[in-house]
Length: 289
Image (cartoon, rainbow, N blue to C red; front, side):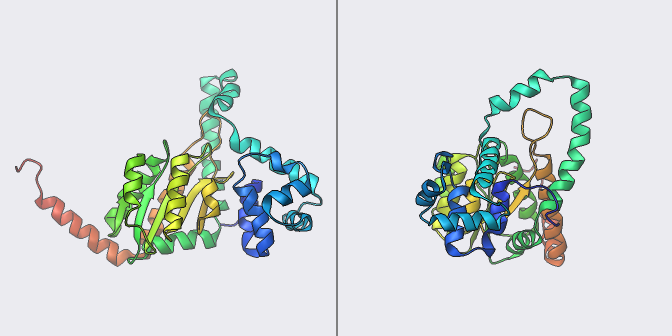
C-alpha cells in the first residue's frame, strides 16, 4: 500500500504533517480547514491568516516540493476548485458527452483502476491504525456517514457488529447524532465517511467527538474532508469517474478490505461470536409470537 499515485495538495499536506515543525503544521492545518482561497493572495496575507511568519509558509511549501509560493499557490487553487466543485457543475460536461455505450465502456475501464489506485494509495501506517482500533475490544465503535456515504457506514457496522461487541450505528439524522454524543469519551472511536461537498452535519459530529476525546477514523476522498485535521487515521479513496456523480465503488472496496482484515486479525473471537449468532438465529423464528 505505497503512495505511488498522484495525490492532491490536501492529501500531500496531510501526509507531510508528522515531519513538520509545530509552526509548519499550523500553516498546513490552516490550508486544510480553509473555506475560501482569499487569504492566498500573498505570502504575507496567508501567513497572517495562519498565525505564522512568512518564512514559515515558504519553508512549509518547500518541504512539499514547491520552489516558491506562487507555484504552491497555483496548485492549491487548482485542487481547491476540484474540492469545491458543485454537483451541478460536475454534471454539465457529463451531460454533453452522454452516450450510453461510451459511458458503460468508460465505467468498466475506470472501476478496476480506481479500486487498485485506492488500495495502493492507503498508507500502511494509516491502515494499521484503523485496523487496531476496529479490533480493540475495549473500544466502543460508532459508525456514521453522509447523505450517500451513510450506506458505507451501514455496511461496515453490519459486519463489525457480527464480529465484535460494542458497535453502534449513528443514523443520518441531526437529532440522533446529538443524542449519540451524550456518553462519548476516551474509549470511543468514530468511524466516519465524508466525501466531496462535505456534510456540515458530519463535520460537526466529528468536531464534537474530538472535543470529547474520542478517536476518529476518517474515510474521505483525495481532496480531504475538513475532518482530516482532527482524525488520527485518514483513509483516502478515488471518487471521480466517468459518471456525473462521484463513485462509492472504491470506498466499498476499501471497506471490504477493512472487514477482511478485521476478521483475519481476530479469527477465534470472531468465529465464536458468529457461531453464537448462528445458534441464536437457528432457534429464533419470526413466526413465533
